[in-house]
Length: 281
Ligand code: AMP
Image (cartoon, rainbow, N blue to C red; front, side):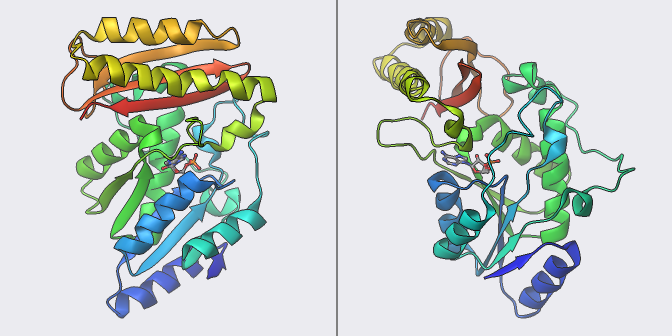
């Protein structure tokens, strides 16, 4: 496995692979990798001849009041995990390699899609995500790219961007990987104290409750959401940012639960903002 820090090294490697007729998969990450990321890498290795993992803590998707500075980092461990999972190339650029000081071009979806759900508290987040993912697509030119369903709004936005911009890259969504007690794996779980870690289970419990109510035939989104909120509000350390039912493609709110409805939430546990969701199948 190769580690590249320069865009030109990645371009050269990918060019060599493509000359030999090999397909390329891309797994974009911000590092501090865990089993959720590992499952994306594994899926890419299964689908593509070569797999590139990008490890880049992208500053343009963080607002000044957010956790860019404190975001956990451990590149040695990231490298190890990538190697174990069978990745071929890890792209780990400096910020200055990705953005010139006068960098001023952004990729942004102008519909309401990035303003819903997480966009309400993170208004510049998805512009940063679309911009960095576009850049990674231009650098790596993958055949397929792999994203987690944990970030369901991000996945929907990337699918839309790829369609709107005719990237010709197949986007593959991978299921949420959870801890044995149900908490969705996240690099941010490391912020939680022992007490908060226990409290954080209210997210996955709310997911399970929502699924159960829907499986029992409830179609009214407000009824499902209010029961999920009630469960979360019973946890003193939890503060709801949002719990919402939206269309799984457009991210617009829905009143009736149906196939492909996304039920998503963001909840603060202490100062840590965690997300979770499920799609109605
Ligand atoms: P991040 O490093 O948080 O930007 O995540 C990189 C990719 O890993 C994104 O596509 C995430 O959706 C995905 N991911 C993060 N956590 C999980 C998880 N628990 N299960 C599945 N995918 C995940």
